[in-house]
Picture 1 (cartoon, rainbow, N blue to C red):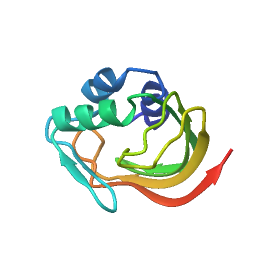
Picture 2 (picture 1 turned 30 degrees about the vertical axis):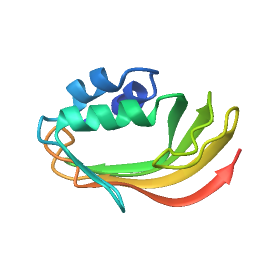
Picture 3 (picture 1 turned 180 degrees about the vertical axis):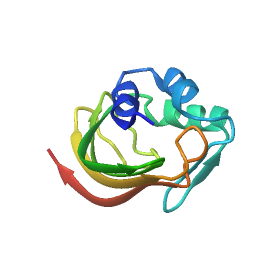
Picture 4 (picture 1 turned 45 degrees about the horizontal axis):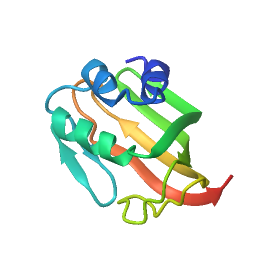
Length: 126
């Protein structure tokens, strides 16, 4: 798995489908502390909805890989084009920039499964 290539693809605006087709299998499971999304089409839809009016850029702070197991510490920088008070992740305001810290893990190869996703640890403004 080429983790930096995944992050590069993820950071391209409106590239959710292309990223998922390249890096996720049809039976992907994406989990966080609250939600579980199963299946590539559902994951694509979730990311498309999550990025509606919001530009997200993931920045790798640190990562390690051992075979098909990857652990990463990431900053997610969000720039908001509109108010999204009902957003499932955070009540974004137009023009606001926020940074979230994530820890994520992948075991068994990203194209096989994604059992432990990013866990929100903190919020800070840029």
